[in-house]
Length: 256
View (spheres, rainbow, N blue to C red):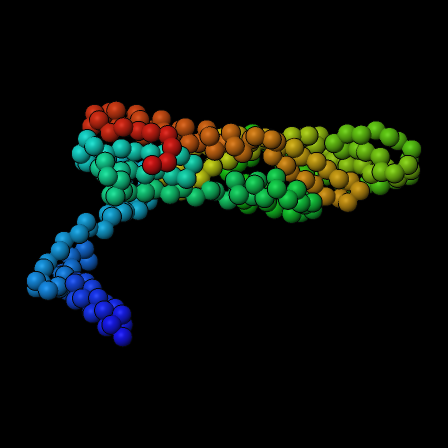
């Protein structure tokens, strides 16, 4: 009985000593009140982080030019982050988004789909419309391609002609030469402020005459090199513009 009474009194005392937190709608979110045996006390905690979203590199540069010398800029494939002070609580982010052509090449590399002649031409005309300058007259060549199959013992293997089994030979013919490789000048990111940053990605172009389809497969390392090149161009632009502003903001390659 004495034990239960002692436990009850101990719990009652602890409850009395525990302060009650009171929030006030009229106060900022980081301000609250504590009520305890001594009364009510106003407490001001650290304010919430001040985080903003930028939609252009100009916005990042503009804020960097006006912030204190303790700020810094970090950039990488995921975007650009401006830290307004040493605490890292107050930042401005510019998030990069991969372009449609880049995403399409990622999917082709991963899945290696068989594309019909019409599907490939449609993709090049629409998704890669502004990327075809290094590819020459590839659209004209593809439009004239014809797939033929005939009985033959030919065992030649090339991009346009190869043996299937022992007797059936499938052949790709046309008025132009079907290249083994396809070069595309693509933007890495979809953000309007980065659309001018473009680089060439080389792909293997395979024609499968037996199924009358094509495969476009980016060569190993090409997509990674494209991201690295585009990221380095952003870093160079940041460094040059901030150096011209002479505000002492440090530029780092990485993630804060």
